[in-house]
Image (tube, rainbow, N blue to C red; front, side):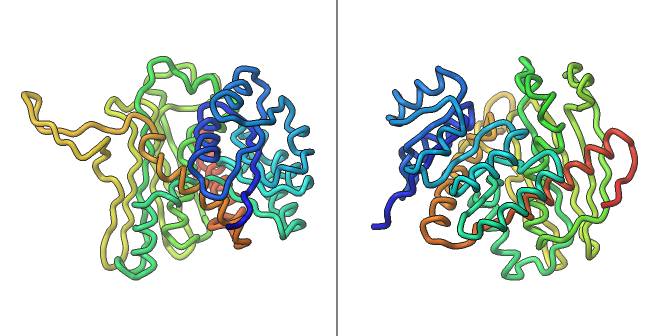
Length: 339
């Protein structure tokens, strides 16, 4: 058997705990040996629940340990770029949650720095690339099942949270398109064959959460992006759905169409009663993509242990940010943005 990849994780919030549990219990070839968080309770959880031997309040202290081979970054987006660069300089492989950065110059800086360390792997967590249904769609497109793909319609809809939980992060999230639609943007590029973006337009409204106005953000948005070769993508994002979480994508080609999750389902149960015939929906993104997050974590560990290229590049992550920034600019200026 290959030696285990010794992993340290930075960030033990909602998503950090999910990745930490996968690495400690479910990912073959990984050993979670260190965890970093400025929150005492989170470090205590890592020790008590996962048996992590070494915990740190400072990221630099964890990076200095020679028994950490790779780091997982599940930290605020504003920290990603510098933390990736710091990890590379410390000789560590890096997995970082999306997006790479909210700043295009920082994305390009990470790309340049990563080229200086060709033996180290860096992967950004665009989880839909590891979902079984999206992978099936991608494989069928590659096999010519729908001819040449030219249009994608993709949407991410969150169940309405009356508490406005996400408002706490609105100041640093980058807005609805960089925070939510970045997954749809990356998915569309992937399914269309990674074309270069040409121009973009976005609009939006505050339907419920008035507190977003102070951050020049919206709780519902729609956008259109044109790519090279006449390919186009439409994105829709909402934080106010009543029925649950929904991520659905339609890919139109010259000889057919593929649709991923046209009817979001919690399971295969259909309910027929006085209200009609219906099914329940997944409540949040994690229930929908739980298996994909595990596959994503496993894929990164395998990339390092097998010494092969990551399944998506830093340039892919940069392009997702580039398009997201353009959509936010269009939302604010009400203008078509040329890329």
